[in-house]
Length: 439
Ligand code: UDX
Image (cartoon, rainbow, N blue to C red; front, side, top):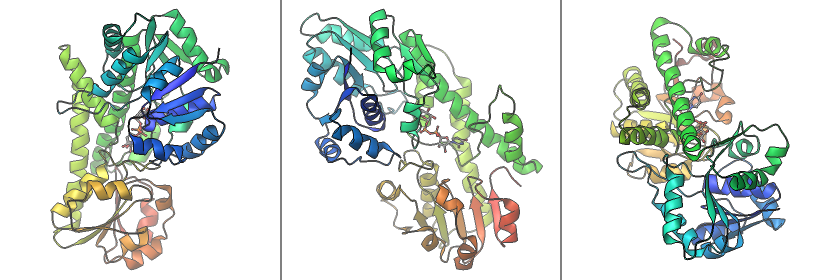
């Protein structure tokens, strides 16, 4: 049976989920209460940068499989599988704010008109499946049967469409056989191709897998950043150390690139949420607490290294290339680049910045600082600066005309915080070159 899908929430998780499921041939309604967002999507415009998503949205909208609406009542009535993909931002104490999830659960209770499978796609605290079940039981107008399922997402921004279509695994958390078979139908395209491992488990385990995986990845990146700090003192080369580590199958060679510290909308949020969840159960996640601290220390270490080498920052022109928290996204949430730019500006430097995709978001987040100049390209940034800092590993920065860059800089001081260049080549070109974990 072809299930009809409604996805509530058209952020990067909800919209990617809706567009990809419609590309699997399913009829999908993407619902959001934000009228402007829905109008934009109806015009075939995706209001954020995610490679390949706009084409996928337009392809499936024109095929009539993918529609957008503000009408959550109709969305609930007309579909049998309802994905909750609304935001779960961190509260002051680090716990996930699930107010929007609870609101959608109440809407489902109010409007449901028959059996439904409700799917928690948003990253939610362990136990939220049971909470959504309770809410629906308490508020539903008639005792319709339903099942609530945990189906966490493992999408990387900048690769979200690829990751949805080629997942390392699909995790489904439910105790109910009927819900299992319906979810196999929803993911039929992946289930039948036999290439995608499916893990069917209980809801709490599925919810825990999401936090456990993300916090582990954050710890892995932070581990390599601390190893990089040691390499800078011992003269070892972190790139070689990471390669040597990664050749051990038990470690794996991914996520071993040192940088300015992790950012984004997931690692910072999920590590804090996991520590908070554990704390509520009287459990201390000391390694993840240490990861959070070590990540902040990495940003401080980077800034003090720049300050020591540049010297007095007051009235100095400093160039920063890259503002997004990583390449291939316009997302600047918890971006280390923004904290470095703010710190440099607050210390009196005149900071010239450029990012291929994140300028609009950065303008908003840096709006209080008047000594930040938003430039139209990398070369304008480099003009007259006493130091140039690579913060985000956009491929176009790897192709910079370095001779032209050096000629236009006031001083050839180059900080490569993503190790996108080779030290030997940079020094041959006459740069005073600093990177991460390479002396
Ligand atoms: C992450 C998880 O990868 C994804 O599975 C989950 O669903 C959401 O969170 P994302 O936050 O989009 O995805 O970015 P990711 O590519 O994982 O990078 C996270 C942070 O680690 C970024 O700041 C990135 O710059 C940093 N990073 C990543 C490194 O510094 N070095 C690496 O080798 C990899």
